[in-house]
Image (cartoon, rainbow, N blue to C red; front, side):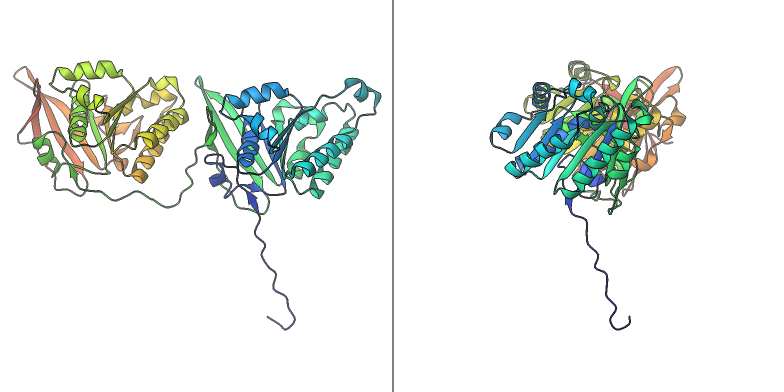
Length: 477
C-alpha cells in the first residue's frame, strides 16, 4: 500500500429484528433498519399479518410504530389482531402503536386535487409526536390505483420514494403479487425502491394448500435465497427453514430397555438413547405392539413418551394393546405418556411439523413414537412426506429425543422404503418384522438389519404375541 492511500472502512448494515419465528434466520438478522422492505404476495398469503406482527412485537419491546391501512378498516384490523392474541388497544393508549385507517375522498380524486403529500406530512407529524421509527403502509397498490393517469401515478410513487429516503423510518410496504395487479401501473418500481423484497406465495397442489416465502433481494446483506415453508398460525407467522450448515445432533447415549430382554439382546444391548429406530413390516406383524411395549417400559422407568398415531385414535390404541397384556392407562394417568392422534390429511406437512414441534417443546419428552410413517404421504405427496420426516428427525436429534417409528411395508423387499424413498440412512436401527410359513402354520419373525454402534444379532428370531406381551425365541437364519 502506498503512502497517503486510504483504507475503505466496511460498514455493516444495521438490521431491525422482526421477532417472527424463523424469519430473522432467513434474513440473517432482520429487515434493514431505516430502509424500505416490500412484502409482495397474493390474496390470503399473509402480507398484512406479517407486517402487523413486526409492528406489534416491536411495540411490545418499547419501539413505537405506525400502521397506515387503505383496504381494511381499523375495527377489522383490531379484531383480526385479537385472533392471534395481539391486543392493540393497550399499545395505542400507551402511545406505542398508531393505526391510521385512511379513507380517500373519491370526489377529491376525480377533481384532480388529491395528492399523497398531506398523507405523508400526517405520518411524519404523528411519528415525531410518538417517537416512532417504524412505519407500515398496507396495500400501497390500493393507494396508487386512485390515480387514473399512469404518469401521475408514477410521479406520486417517485414522491413517496424520495420522502421515505429522507425519513429515519424502518418502512414496510405491502402490495399484491404481480399477477394480481395491472402491469400498466408500473409497480415494478416498487421492487426497485425497496432495499429488501419478500415474496409470499399461497399455492394449492393435490388439494393441499401450502405457503412459501422467498427473499427476492436484500441490498447490502446476505440472505437465504431458497423457498421456505411458512404458516399463519394462531400466534402469528412461522417460517420453517432448514438453513443450518452444521449437523448439531447429539451423540448416542446409553442403552434403553425395550421392554423385552430377548429383543435387547438381539439389538446388542437395547435401543440407543437419542437414536432413530425404524420397525418395518407388512400388516399384522406386530409393529404397534412392539412400539407400545417400548413406550410402557420407558414410562415405567420414569421417562416421558409422546406417542404420535396417524392411523388410530388414542382410545383404539389403548383398547387394542390390552389384548397382548399391554395396559397403557396407568402411564397415561401418571402423565408420562401423551398421545397426539390425527389424520395425515387433516393438515399440511408444515402444519403437522409445527404442531408436533409445539408438543415436543411443551412436553419435553425423552422419546417419540410415530405409528406409522407410511401414512405420511397422505399429507400431500411423497416428497412432502420425506421432507416432513427429515425435519422432524432433525428436531429430535437436536433435542436428544429417541425416535421409534413404525412403517407398514408393502412387501418384504420394501422394509426401508418410505414414500418411494429409502430412509435407511436416516435410521440408526432397522428392525424387520415378517412371517414364515411352515407346514401351513404362520409364525412371526424378527431380524435386526442394522444397529449402529452395537454388535447385534444377525439371526432370524421367531416371536409370538401372547396375552403377556411379546415372547421372542432365537432360530438360525
